[in-house]
Image 1: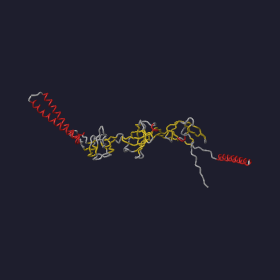
Image 2: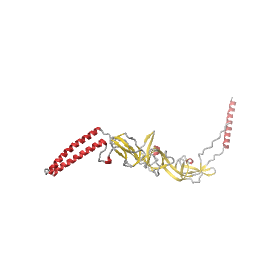
Image 3: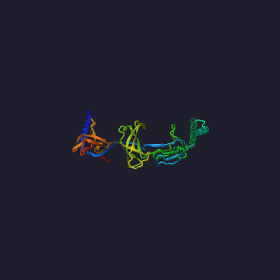
Image 4: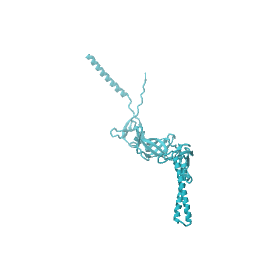
Length: 372
């Protein structure tokens, strides 16, 4: 039994020994690793981050009435270019019964006072003409008469305004005629003829009759994530690409970054705005979705290498490459790097344009498998 056990152990040792010899033989038969090399190139490198948003007018003006009533007629359509003072709509006033009755009573009261002062004025004038009263007394009666006359006229105008929304003598100030306050394009007309509208006052925002804007002054409004907001600053250049306008970009300048972020879908987002530098005649419709490439850094015609060629010292984290000095012989060269776009990185110092850099992480060719 002991003899059999010894034989088994010796057999295992022999198998292990010959297996090791065979492994070493196979390793010696493998071709040595041959590293490829790449040379630096001249590149334009742009480091940027992207924000999503839309194109909107820099200033939108909401036209609201200053009197309640019914839209009698609309004179504009969305898409039209109009000027300040152009007629937008006419409102037919539906008077409030209580206000109308109060104004009517005011007219009657003013009429009674006016008739009384007129009679007094006529008596005082007759006495003054006969020399019975002094000029001072007659002047007081004349002033009271004229004041009553003006009050009566004002009461009549007030009654007419409440009843119809306008009156004679106020010209273009008639509040039944709604006019444009700016030069621009009509973006939207949310009301139709026959719709009831509410006046704009301290207690009510009022009904919007039309939305106007100068479409030659457009801005990009978008959002950036909190992880990117620390990299950007005001006055950085933007490249705006609009989804509906292919093969065309628009230049802009970042002029606003929100001081406070808003949580959206579990992430903090910051609003940004950029004014478009519209130098051509391309019509950009308000509300179009767009992406803004925020240019963080840009260099032109610089010596660059692929980022995949760069290695980092495990202790100092100093970037370096291995440069070929002979046939499959390489020497370490420390680098000073600049702007990177994630694919290429600028090389400020360490190598020349003629340097042959080792591709240290090259992919091994796939092995072919055959089946019997």
